[in-house]
Length: 465
Image 1 (cartoon, rainbow, N blue to C red):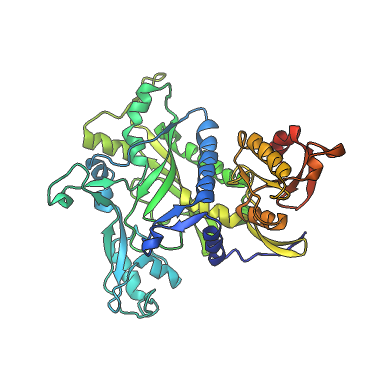
Image 2: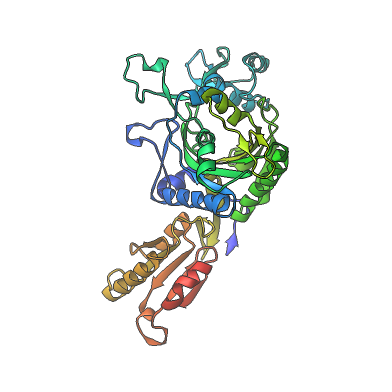
């Protein structure tokens, strides 16, 4: 096999592959699409579920003091007042006076090589924007005629349970982040399970943000899925715990098979007032290094705020020292959709095999949407098809398998390569008779190597591959 160095895993190629092979579709595509929304297709939902399962295994199953939660998407409106989202969950918007296109000001500033972020005051970001107005162009029309920068709240409003004509004055919000449901259930989990501080609560769930300019495919969405863990610790243990989780989360990506040169740390320059530390793990996407996961030391702000606004005691009584305190929080937060894009980018490859150029997704087996594909050599030979169906039934009870009898074997191999299937099993005439009876040909995705394996040993062989 002759490797092509530095394959061009550009966004165009990745988007094309994801559409062609049923990983990702534009949301509401037949109606022209809806910005910031995407649908995961047959292979995409398998990959997404595998990413969630690997994260959950690492975060919950692999930890003695972390439990799971699935909190409601809708919460009491005061939750978002307490969290600061009603007053401070905003992005800087600027509008082109020529074509009325709205953009995030910090992104436009970043595109010309300067720095700005959403934590700046409106005065600060306007100052930076004004300093670079002569270089900043509208993403649609290319003109340089913009309004002043203003901040727009990102919470998505709903009329849930409110049937008045002016419901928007007192809305119920779709959650802007999943972690608030964890803070709301801190006492419930503490009182109903055997956990004690330090302990964590992990959750995978939907969040909604009224993004000004969703872009870069599934990297920045209006409907997204978060995978978050909040660790509740003694105040004096916060930073030690924080450093431990920084190292754990970095190692997580290396264990998945990510190349270390495609990852880097980025420290937040403008911390929110209550945070002690905030670092991002950035990944080298086709459009450059961008945030993949955030690890944050949040102090006691979250529980203290909900204690204040709800009037409920959220302090913790240490059973050993008899000390009472509000636990501090160490958070790890990663987007499933960004993880999905990072995984496809990381394992996308092009090489030459058998004299032909191919596209292949070199997923580790744990992430591969389909673990094995089963082929009858010829679809017009009933005895081969019957045996292939028998083998497929056996394998599909143990792993996600796919049956394919369409086209020649070479084309079937290429299809499976493009969706990242680690192994293909072919039932041929040697399977039916002679010294090789009840053996099949197993073809390796990465090398193209083929091996005869007895059907009775096939499951264990594939599990170890």
